[in-house]
Image (tube, rainbow, N blue to C red; front, side):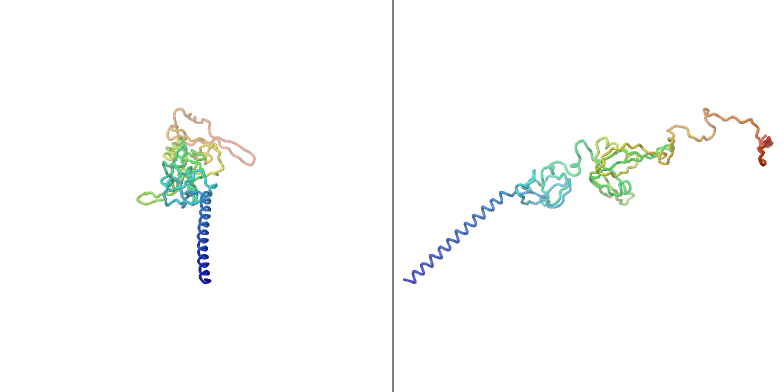
Length: 290
C-alpha cells in the first residue's frame, strides 16, 4: 500500500508541475503580447531615405526604407508605406535616414524645374575658369552678371556693364563639348532670374562676353554701377567720337567749316643775346624760296 501511495503522489506532483508550467507559459505569453501591443501603439512606421538624394530624383523602393519612430516624434506629412512614396519626385536635397514628407515631394515634373519658383525662370550660361570665378560658383551662391560688349567700329570703345545683380545660382557643373573635333570641358552655371532678366542675359551672351562676380550671401544690396568704357578705364575723360563724326586729325584738305590760318606777313627777326644785352636784327630772306 505504501508503495502505491507514493507512486500516486508522484503522478499527482508531476501533473501539478505540468499544469503550473502551462499556466505560467500562457501567462508570460499573454504579458508579452500585451507589452508588444502597447509598444506597437507607441510607435509608427516612417519611410526614410536609404541614401543621400539630390533634388529632382524620381523615388524607387531601393532608395527607401521603413523604420520605427516614436509616435510623438513622427514628422507631419510622413509616409508609413513605400508604395505611397515610390514614383514621386524630390523637390529638395535629402540625406540618408531623413524622413520623407509630403512637402519635399512632387507628383509632377522633376529635375531642376522643382527649384524654379513661380514667375521666375532658370537660365544657363557657359563660363570658363576666369569668368566663372575659378569654378567656385556653387548652387545656393549669389552672383552679379557682367557683360562686356566689343566695339563695332574703330571709333567706338568696348563697354562693360553690370546687367544683373544678386541672382541665385541653381546649379553648376561641367559638361563636355566638341570643338574642332576635340573634346573640351565647359563649365555651365544655371541662375534664377525673372523673365526680363532672362531676356537681358540672352542678349548679353549674344552681343558680348559674360563674367560672374561672386557676392557675400548676406549682401542683398543692389548697387548703382555705371558702365565702364575703355577710355574711362585708361583715364581718358574725353568721350569717344560718335558714329559718323569727323575724325580729329584731318587727312588732306580740311573741311570748309574749319578756319584756315592766314600766313603771317611779319618779317622774321633774329634775336641776339650778348652778355646782358639783347638786340634784334631782320633775318636775311632765303632767295631759294622765291
